[in-house]
Image (tube, rainbow over the protein chains, first blue to last red):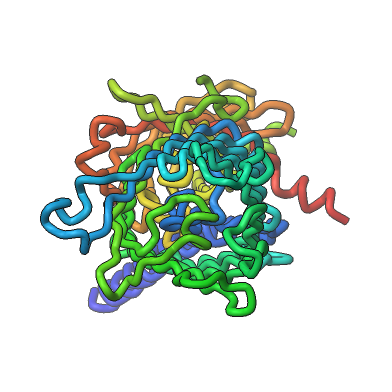
Length: 307
Length: 177
């Protein structure tokens, strides 16, 4: 009797053990299935690093971003008057300069844009091409490089003794925008720039002005970021009484819009104006408050989707 | 040999997952064709892995926001599901009949794991296992925040459709050398 009970106990224990082992095996196998799937070697593909910046503009100047194929971006930019212009001018809010612009992504890389500025009644147009895209994976590319060529036409009626031919009213800017997204939050951009002015005020003034821009963004939350932009004028070609353009901005993104609020010592919103016509001293209150607003429209949906 | 066919493992790397969000203001649709699936008919287990960045949207900005703001795909690059088929009829499957199945398992999206029940269908056709499933997910359940401003644009419940054609694993390995 006693013996049988022990035997029974042993058998029970053995059954329990086997059962436990089986269930562990089942669990392990279950785990394995997902692990197997994740571990099967795949042909690794390079992955593009997207959204280096939220907007098409860093503050005044362009970012490496392009709207993407079939997307039309509408940009409204404002700069108010100088902050130190006194209470009579309501600290600059009485005056405003405006730029309206359209940019269209012909392909994911190539963009064309046009704009109209109240300052100098200038029209501007540009071509922007994303030549290199930052990517991870095999043959990773460390930076995104976008090339930008813009021209601006001053259409002010000017009555002085210099004849303003069409050519003399034109200014060209060439930029290589080089950016790297270091982390989801931090992106830095460097912008070597050449501004060519067909007409200058004095013979001693350079027609070609070289500048080096640096800027970046640091995200504060998922949908806001702090931006900085600085253009250093190369001394050898620096026109007289100009200052380097400095700007501090704050981006807010809401669904299809990007709002950018900023303070800068440049009142113009096109390259020739903020790089080669900035005279304000940022630290002496020659500050312009401004904002950019961008709205994207999908003109042509990606292939395979209903409009 | 259909009997043998209803036993082994089946795998794909090119399954399609589509999701739809329908609201008064906006319809959002995205598709990934890089869904990996591994199905073990012997043990009745299934596993799925979807790279989040593989989802394609009709608007580039939507895709950017999806990755940057909602799914945080840099932090959570994959969505996974592993589950157990509750009512697998291997014989019917071996006969080439479409099988309605109930799968229970863990769905991991945006770093959050939830126990879910999913209805699906399995069918063996010419040695391939066809997998279909249609189910819904509430973004809020997976810690995906939708800001007030766009709350009307994004549905509270997102419908998900899965279609995959899985090949027998033994066939794949046999074909390799």
